[in-house]
Image (tube, rainbow, N blue to C red):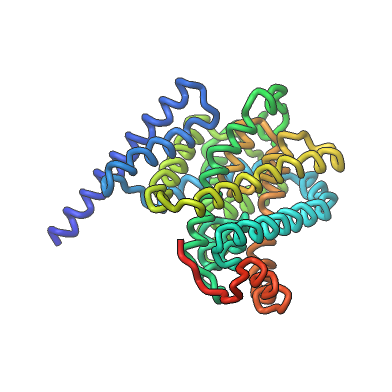
Length: 377
């Protein structure tokens, strides 16, 4: 009993230390006016400290999950009946954009696999721009896929998206003319009351719990989004959350990323490091190019289109969209569609591809020795 109590106090002390370091990193980034400072600052600070102070940091996933709930509310508040109509109108473009980025990632994976001699199916699975945890599970389920390589490529992609996309999207070149609308203008005129607070607390928390029970992807984000959107479309007002609450949520998200990502594990990997970085950068550049097409086809402002198509998680892109004053509804719609498409369609498709004769021919082209063996990092 005493040992468990001592372990509990040790974990609380490590959480407090992690929070202090993360908040300090956010404050430093704020002083230098770095975009998305309350998320990127903690992530960068904890990445750096964790590199030299092993075992001292701790940030439970439960805190990250709790932070996703207010973010989910903010994204859900932007979803109106008009938004659903617009989503239906843009559904073909959503499908096209998702399929194209998947095909592009497959093409890049072929080139990367030929260059590094890492098995193609491992590189393909590691390069898919889906949720990190979902892709890791998929990598464990597919035959002939090295989960370590999948983790490596997915983590490198996430690091690139977390740090590069905000710097690009919030740079003066792209955000010089801030977009005024966020898709939730009606919520800006509403005010909080005790009853309204309890209503949304109950609905968002219940949405997160139910989402987890029915195994929704990123349940603590999607559950509150769906619950909040349902209330908004039913006519309930959705006032904006206090800025300090969203800042705290960003710190919790940044702390989780900083503790989770461990660059020390991927150091000294030579060509594989460059390949993984190049893959992530190629996906970001492809998203930037695709955003121009979305702007031309539907008149979506370029900044909104870029964030909507960026190969990141919906939570990080949702925070970024809010900071950049992009259209939250459009960003949420495109990111949500890609997540569900990748989770529902991609796994069975990959299983069929990996068993197909044409795919094995590509594998032989990638590794001319014709002995397709697992190759570690």
